[in-house]
Image 1 (spheres, rainbow over the protein chains, first blue to last red):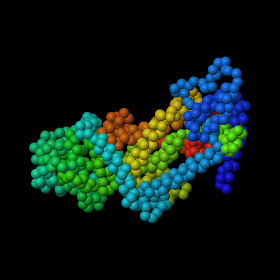
Image 2: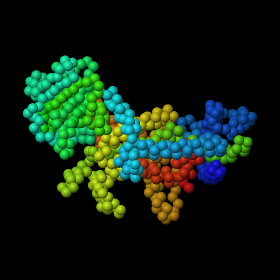
Image 3: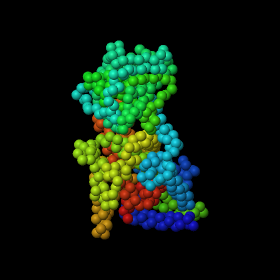
Image 4: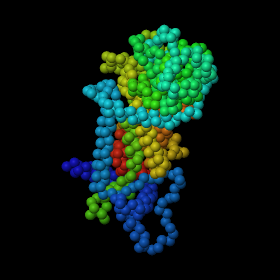
Length: 356
Length: 270
């Protein structure tokens, strides 16, 4: 019954098409004739090259045979105007049995419907539960499979970022007139400075298998100081150009080398507070390739002054090739490892690599 | 004749019809895939925008609100009937045109997911366009400015013609697309390329800093990326209205590929 209805539809369309065509012929007979010539030429080529297609160029063939039977043509007849390289080609006109056209149409419409259904289901699967709840879809819409699926996308992006990274590619540096204000983006409350007097930097997981403890004076006196004006880019989208100075992470790696199989460093902060002011330990993973970048600093100074608490006194990681969230403030411990260590924000749904 | 007709010689195989092969399968696939992809990109993109809006003003002394989407939400809830009781007016825009507020992590994941699909889809389309020669129908012509204006005049006049019940004659053209369509369909892939380029420039501003420099630096590139989103939105609205106004043949041709309308059409108006 459905099929019959569709058949009727098609017949109506056919009738409409014929009517329209009649009008066209009346209006512009010359042009229409030209179209016919062109399309016949095309059809001829088609019927030779693609016998599998439902193209039956009956009239074209007929025309050919007529030509052959009649008196030999006096001069070659141009059936297709030569067109330039940039000239628009007109779409192909094909003859097809109505039944086949119906089947073709039915198949494509079903495909389309299936695609729409798949998109709706896919959207329902991919969107965060809170968003779905606002759309009126409640119930348990969170699943580890969603998490895993999107992790593939973010891992792909991390792999691309890692492939783009080169230790030898420097980030742009700026002049002092380009410096912009830098906001304190502590994730919660800014800590008070009570941690400062007893502060040390502890290195663990070294090749010597013994931990090393360094005071801020050790860092300032035993290593060459470097300064740079670079851009710090936040995952939120804002950025700031700031003037930093400190020790190259690479120099520290050379002075206190990790074992040959170490690929990662876990960087811990002295202190981090949540919004209520309660301790909320902060740690980030850094791949050693990034740590070895010539512009990756353990910064001690900001704008020529020793770091203040809000910018991570007395020592912060400054890796301009990473998002700000990897630029851990007030670092107190660096632990080298062969395995990828934990990362505060990766555990909260962000990328693990965060390469810029 | 490029129109359906009965073929008497071929009656054994049933009636034969003639149709125009209007859209290649690659074009159709790329077109429809763009719908969920762009929707996903816009929804997640506005959630990313929320985290640090590029357009900010001085914070309102009372509310502390400093950006325009929040203002728009407050205005909506104050003036649109039925929205007066909305629980958090500053979030209205974000709650209706994005994944929501405080959604940066899921929004970034979805944005990368859809961005890679968008890139793959765009490449497929451009390669098909190059190999199949379909790019020719999109090339701007010298006459396009004049013809586009004629189309604009026509569209502007249609509502008045409907009200006054006067006949409105569609401008004639003998190409696959009219000048305005050509402008739109030529701009969309271009905007796609720019959206992807600016996206990479702000996603990898250090490794690809030269790319951000082309667009005027990191902050300027964010502005580009934001307005390229608006390009797609502003394109989509008349695109959807006009395709349905044009009729089922036009919609169907993007699904099935065939059309009853011949290429050299001067009878598009009914």
